[in-house]
Each structure stands twice: as C-alpha cells, then as structure tokens.
Amino acid sequence: MNKRFGACGARLRAALRLLGLPLLLALQALVPAAVAGERITVAAASDLKFALDEIVADFRRAHPEGTVDVVYGSSGKFATQIRQGGPFDLYFSADIAYPRALEAEGLALGPTRPYALGRIVLWSRSRDASALRLQDLADPAIGRIAIANPRHAPYGKRAEEALRAAGVWEAVQPRLVQGENIAQTAQFVQTGNATVGIIALSLALNPALAAQGGHHLIDAALHAPLAQGFILTRKAEGKVLAAAFADYIGTEAARAVLRRYGFELPADD
Image 1 (cartoon, rainbow, N blue to C red):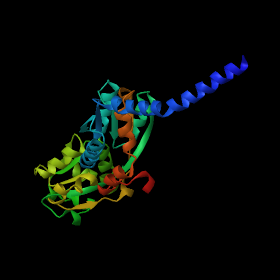
Image 2: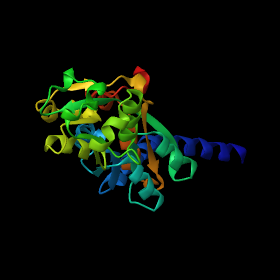
Image 3: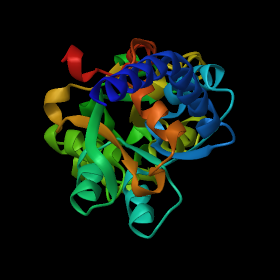
Image 4: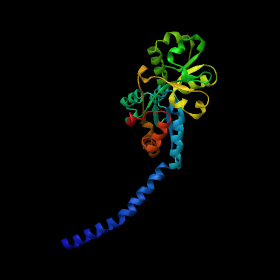
C-alpha cells in the first residue's frame, strides 16, 4: 500500500514540475491584463510640469496599455482635495510635509517617498535676472514682483522666507503679485504682469522660459529646504499601473530627467 502511495506521490510531483513553467507563464500573462485599460490620475505640484511631462511620456511608451493623466496645481490645495475624496491615485508635493500628513491620517498606501529637492530663482523677461539679487527688489523702479501664494504653495513660502532673510520683505510687499501656484507665478512674468518673479529652477530651465530670460539661483541658506515627496493614495489600491508608475519614478531614467531640470535628488544630496 505504501509503495502504491509512494508511486502516486512521485507521479504527482513530476506532474507539478511539468506544469510549473506553463503555470508561471500563465500567471505572468495575467499581469498585463490587469494593467490593460487602467487609467490613473496624478496630482502634481506645478514645479514638476516640464520634468514630469517627459517622465510620463517615457512611461507611456513602456506601458501603452494604460492611461496616465496628470493634473498640475498647488501642493496645499491638492492635499485638501485628497482629504475631501479627490480622484487622485498619486500625489506629488513640492513640500514633503503635505504627503506625510496625509500618510499620518491613513490616506496613503505605504510610506511617503522622497523624490527631489527644489530650488528657487529670480527670473525675468524684461531684465537680466542673472545680474539681479534679492536686495535689488527693494528698488521701486523694479516694479511688480511675482511669487506663489505662501499660504498654500511651498515655493511661495520659501520665496517669503528668502525675502525676509534678505531684509526686503516689507519693501516689496506692496508690489507683490501672488500666483495660485508656481506655474501661474511664471505666467505673470511671461505676460508682463510682473517684472520679475521668484519661481522654481525647474521652470526656468525649460527651454521655452530659458529662451525668454535668464535667472539667478537664490542662496538655499536663505530659506528652508524644498524637500519634495509623493504617495500612492487609497484610491490607487489594487491598481497595477499606479504601483508601476510609482516604481518608475525611482529608475535612473526618471531621475536623469529630474536632474536635468535642476532638481537635487535624495541620493545625490
């Protein structure tokens, strides 16, 4: 009896070994099917506009079976929308404190992932911004100055900190024009609604803006770091495409794009 059971067991084990490869291939075939037709929505800080557009385009070529939509805006406003049930699968913030707060509130899938450190610059179309310094902004002849709204835009907060540290905050306040986000701040300067703006280096390095005017890198010692991070939100649960995109941000291809747009990367610090 034992011999018969032993023979049966041997045949069963042999059959499982034969099925192993086909079964593995069948399981692998299910993975693209899980991604096919998936659509994810990414909420991203406006400083990522040009860099993330490139990253998403590269990702789409590798994952043509899914759709990635990106909405750009204010980090602080996106955090509020996520708390209210906003339809975002991933959230990239110019201030890592926002996604960490959402994580603490149980609104994230996994921990917050740092992805970059941003920088601020002086930028102008009508003046040589490379020759400007923050102290020069106290001169009324400069005209209006654009910054992002410090109440909910991280780049605006850092602009205010830098202007205070340079001792010119009180002098420039009457001439400030505030954008809802850093992209709108750059638009104010592009359209002539402000003479000079304090914007993200990542925007100033875009060829379209770089061709219109120079920039001056503001000393990072004048403001708190612009540490940036992202999360997968609860909306992304079970979405293979969302997890794949989150992992892609850590690849060298994506990091190279971020680096080209002036972002300092966590491993580079």
